[in-house]
Image 1 (cartoon, rainbow, N blue to C red):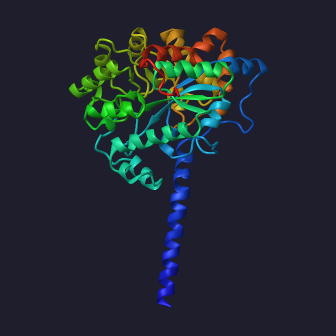
Image 2 (cartoon, rainbow, N blue to C red):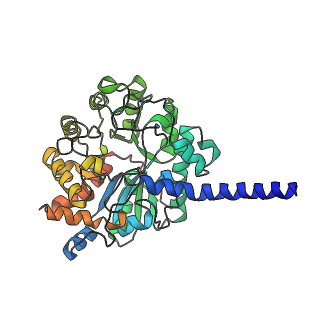
Image 3 (tube, one colour):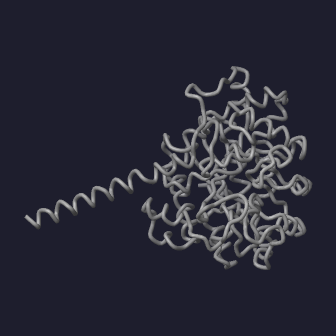
Length: 400
């Protein structure tokens, strides 16, 4: 009898473990990435839909690689996947790897040594053991997942590593192929683990964009939300990383950088940074949005600024609220320096998922923007910046 009880108890534990690892990550994802869209979607006119289908659309920031879904399959979780991106007519999507998030994360101040939220998520998702306690391996595991998906479905997904890759992707789409180009990025430079040699490892793995900091200060310097405050700028190691990124044709992202770090990067010759996902501070006064004057300096250096979709940065929960933030960005920075930076699946809310992106085209038309302006904001500016910034290797890495 005792043996049977032990067997039954073991079976119950096993069943509970299976249920936990199967259901808990999805529950967490749904809780952290709410979709605030009406059941029937937002109204989109035929005119807006037709315009939307003619656009070349790009998005500077999304985090679905964190959630260990097969992005080639349409999901009921989160905001995005490859089928929904293609349905929304997105041509190029930056997909970033998230590797660390401090417990109690907030926009004001976070301690780098705080307990990490991503470690239990990776363990709970049963990601490879090597990624459980190494930030470098955690980023590389997500990069490997993206590269694997591109290998399994080359007719629907390509990883963009060079200007040649981008040109080929856009030509394929012009010829009617429904295919997405993915640019691989890192949410913060901490996965480099303080070793410049890891930048080459990341480059070889396909990374072409790195945000220097996330929600905490790291080896590269100060975060907008870190303990060092505005006085914590770019560290000597951070200067080495930025200089090497410029040499390699990698995109410098200042989305979570401290004001001092932004200033330090802008002083480096050849730096042409972007700010991938944000709002405009004078339009939505929140500590998440960088000061307008620094945003303007980024634009004047040839950078672009991606406007996010979530309520904390646009001070609203509708497509019209996002369009209003975009209009404020155009007024501040000029129409040649504004792009999209959804932050889809980045533990944020969104008023529509990737499949219903035409709602934003409708909202921009409703604001009185011209088709030419909308074309720049929805992707034209991003494509130009990528074409001018990505490395040129003389041949496409995707060529047969």
